[in-house]
Length: 220
Ligand code: MN3
Image 1 (tube, rainbow, N blue to C red):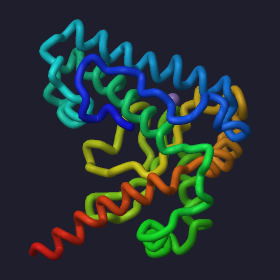
Image 2 (cartoon, protein in one colour):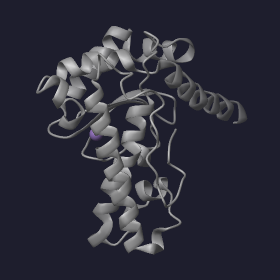
Image 3 (cartoon, rainbow, N blue to C red):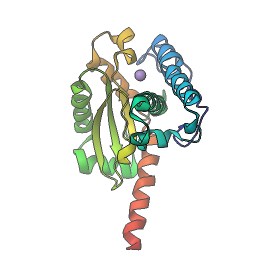
Image 4 (tube, helix red, strand yellow):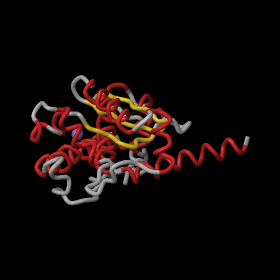
């Protein structure tokens, strides 16, 4: 689920699984704090900023992420960071599942083969990217509007939304995402997170973009 096209007041998107369901890969305490405090805090701060600037009450999360440049510079960052924080955490938690398939099937499986050769190569490439993020940020497997697969990283609470990239799998590499369970061992966190990727959901998102592309090619 996503708040992307919702407006004020934003709410904490509930987890689609129990708080302990990601054990042993991600421990209960980490999920509780990450979702219940960090994500909640982005929601609260975004709502508070809108209350102080009620002219943004009709803006969707998508508007805050795409049209941020239209916001006066002295208040721009508070909207960018907190709208980004809400979006990225919703993606991170909703693209994980305790019942994860080992790998994708169908059109997404074909695309992984085309773009990376194999799942092993995709994993290695994404791990390299996740470990390369200096400080806080994310690594993300996305589908581009041309239905290409791409791995991107972004800092802090930037998002792929302005590029029209749709996330298929997102790893939060802010230390709060793994420090309790893994301390500084981001590589181990990555390897365990990999077991939680909801490939079924990723397949659906990929196929939706791919179908639109095929239709477009047919139309012209
Ligand atoms: Mn986080």
